[in-house]
Image (cartoon, rainbow, N blue to C red; front, side):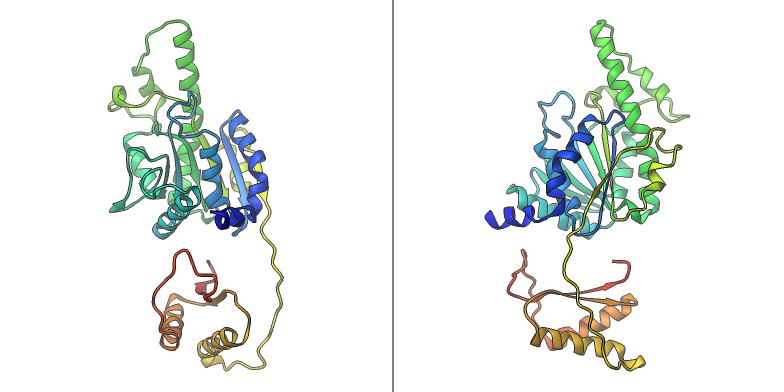
Length: 321
């Protein structure tokens, strides 16, 4: 719709599409880092850039495999995939799908798959080369969870291996030599003697890796020669800047600061123009307490999706958010 198109055009990453895709398609080592603050649009727009550029097209000689996008949390995988389906105007669960533990809406038509990091690690146990994918996008890499670090370490080996096997396949084809599947096992991790179901796997094509981080601390990836011998290019995306005005309370009782926060939210809601309200709390328990206070005052429980812009939104979060 026109409204969705207009909202996409406001995202800072949109004007970087050409730069991003130029690096993704032409970088000889197959790894690109996108660094952009929260709100830049990298999570929802990057998969769409890839899809529009021909990735996940079965007719593509280089990138016929799926676009895989990892998220550290189940809620993010589900909500982001739904949003991307809405923006692409496709059926949710067909071209764009999600998979988390115990739940998925995958289909044979899926081109963009959002998943938790654990799901991708599980897939690598049976298919280390990830043949069904043409590009993997690791989102929220700055969180440096165990699963994130494992995936970056494994994929830093798989990406050049896929390129090597692809080039060897082209050479065999040009020389009309039969393909030797047993060569794959020699190139895999030490101790793995066979490649299960090799004949049933899709043909090997190059794999691209995109690492997305919300902070400028990317030296962990670019200056670590144990991960990437050749430092990957870093694309910096600016965040949207909004005017900020600071207001300070005259006095807040130390033991009653949660009630004071509740009172302030009510005050803002009733007196100020439309706009979201974000409240930072110290712990999850405080979030739940404040949520109950506000729910008791404003008892509307129905959640609108997409959100009704005429209704005020309130978000409670810890600092980590």
